[in-house]
Length: 111
Image (cartoon, rainbow, N blue to C red; front, side, top):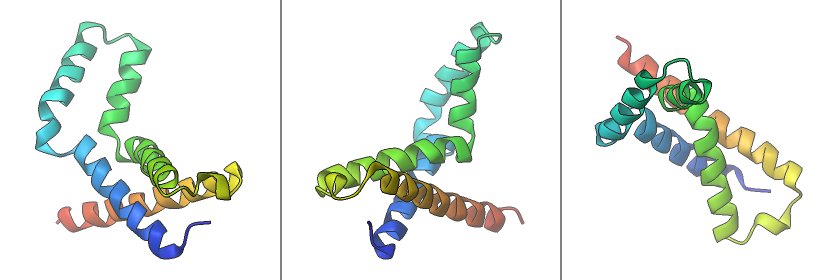
């Protein structure tokens, strides 16, 4: 099982990765292309799913957390040291920490 300090760092990495995908201007051209692609066939459920994914911090954060955690576990050789269920709980913890950071950031920028 991952230590609390490691989970906190992974949650912060998840927060930053989520911000990159959903809000940062560096990915505006990619998001604009996906939105234009969606406008060509707005009735497409697959296109709607992708637009929702790249515009929702909760949706994106979940998958970013999974990717960050998987890379960390594989690179550090910790994947085989715990059951998959434990890694699932770690995924929930990392995603939850990332969402908390996003909520805190959103509340600071609201006023």
